Image (cartoon, rainbow, N blue to C red; front, side):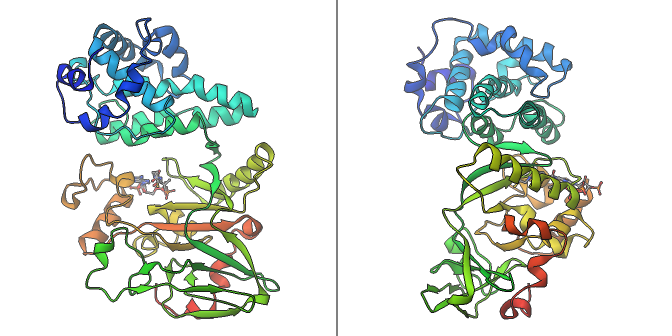
Length: 428
Ligand SMILES: CC(C)(COP(=O)(O)OP(=O)(O)OC[C@H]1O[C@@H](n2cnc3c(N)ncnc32)[C@H](O)[C@@H]1OP(=O)(O)O)[C@@H](O)C(=O)NCCC(=O)NCCS
């Protein structure tokens, strides 16, 4: 058996050694005697192409690639290590910085990772069998995973096929979590971890959210991921006091920022309806545009019904998401009719500790560091965000929640219309 360093030396690229070395001995201890590796055999991967959204045009390139990997002990070992790291470890570690073996040829080398992603399907099927997941949901969830990752990769690599390594981890999630696509969106049922408490007024139904105590905010109520970024700013720290008599804290405006001014509510009138640890539908937004309010609402309803039926012991309280898509700066950048702006006005936005380039990859698909002067400006979204950044604005991401009890009011801008007086007059 070759060591990780020897494998990479033979492949001709040592730059990913740190990451490749992780769990190497563990995966090599289970290296199959039988060669070629089962997931390189055509009778394994060929039937998975259609369910995972790969057209017949990929058969020949995949055949060449699988055969070339099988012929090389170094590439076979790396492929096994990739398979093992994706699907077998007890502790998952992201694959990052691994080489695309040059020996496969400039055009085919990215297909190394497509073969790994395809291997997800039988494992996911087995897991879904145990949950009795209907065929349609399996189809919508799996279909296109490899195909859509491949398309995204091609967009960012002048048409050359492959899979971005930051997307490979999804293949692991499908085989062991509650990640499913239901209509336009995907969801995972999981406990909330966003340092937020949400209260509803017992009579009026009004909703007010507060951050936990001890969080740092910029003067205008946003959060940075890197504490060093607060240097020189008049930053402030949130308070939150909850007892039998009062709820006292720095409220979030549903427009996406926190108020420095403290608000005190009489505890008897307000019910705590969402807090960290509560089960939520954590939403992920697949690529594809066309995210109309109707499609969003349809997916939200499907999500509620599906998880209530298949995970009945874990009732969800809200749909939540953290993304560039819930950055309230989009309301300054895009027209009010844009799908993303319409969606933002139907949910409760709140700040997410972000770095200045978080989420921009989903818009520009750049390789390596974000460079504003190099990004494509082809679509209207790419142009308008780049122009906004040209003006010197610091980019952010945002969190949102939508309580499932408010789903029936989707379309009425419920949180905005009932915004507390305490934050209503503040500038976003
Ligand atoms: C989020 C998303 C679905 C929004 O779609 P939408 O607002 O309904 O977009 P529309 O279909 O109305 O498209 C509006 C314009 O933006 C462009 N556009 C949409 N998504 C784009 C993207 N991800 N990158 C670049 N341009 C995009 C469209 O081409 C269109 O441009 P045009 O006016 O030049 O034709 C879409 O941006 C997307 O697919 N994003 C990738 C997935 C993602 O970011 N997920 C979240 C990860 S945290």
